[in-house]
Length: 170
Image (cartoon, rainbow, N blue to C red):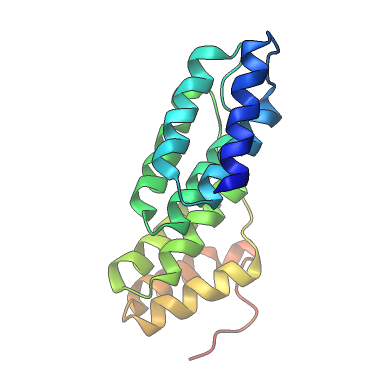
């Protein structure tokens, strides 16, 4: 917390002296806030970035925030950010999806694991190739939470694409 506060103080000092922080500076501070589990403050800082800078957030900015929300267990807020990225001209990338897929799957709750499967499917439909490990984890999660039908349909649908998991442990 102390180093994040020092970073914010330095940031404010830079602004007072007329220096314009770049995107990297904003992203580093956002990451620090998220790592300190201060996601609401990170969202306020995002608003400040949009108002005060000559540039807006980028995909990396959103990925930092999505990961931050997932870290504090607010996965649905991360999901909302994924949906809202386009409003700022940001296109989700493979990481944007993978962060959420992993977070939903890690809960081991039936509905959230099913959501991870749906996000994985959306990711593939948008042209991203998920890591095999991610596919394996989701398939295992789906099977272990009683979502076998979705897992079966997913495998049937994507087996032609060469994206089958290496092995599924039951």
